[in-house]
Image: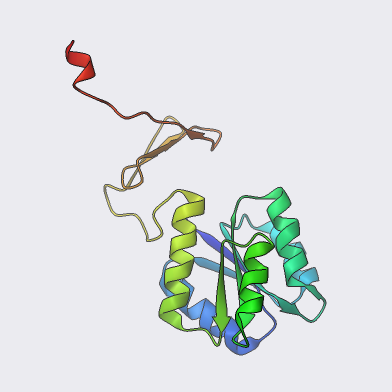
Length: 168
C-alpha cells in the first residue's frame, strides 16, 4: 500500500516541490489549497502524514494541528516561514511531530517526511523490498521494523526471545 501524504499549502511553487520530491520517494501526494478543501479530502483519503502550512488564507494552521492531534496519531509536519524559530516551536507545541521551514530544501523535506513516517506509521519509509513485508491470513509482519499487525490493523506487541532462559 502506497503511503499517503495530505498537504495543506496555498503556494503553487511549494506544492510543486512537495509533489515532485515526495512523489519520487514513493508517496501518494494529495494536495489542498484551503482549509475547506483539506477537510473534504481528509474524509476521502486515509493520510499517513499531514503536511500543514501554518499561514493559511482561511484558517489557522496551529489550530488545525491541535485539532488533528486530539483525534489522530498520524504524523504531522508543519510548514513555516524562514523568519524565525518561533513558528517552528509553536508548531511543535501545538502537537506537530516536526517542522520544516520554507523555502523547502528537497533532501531535507524527504528526510524529515521519511523520519516521521517511520516513527508514526511503523513501516519502512521507502518502498519495501522483496523480504520487507509479509502478509498471511490478514496479518502483516514487517521484518525491518520487527512489527506485527493483526487483521484489524492494530499492532500486536512482540516479545524478544532469550535463548539462555529456555535452556534451564
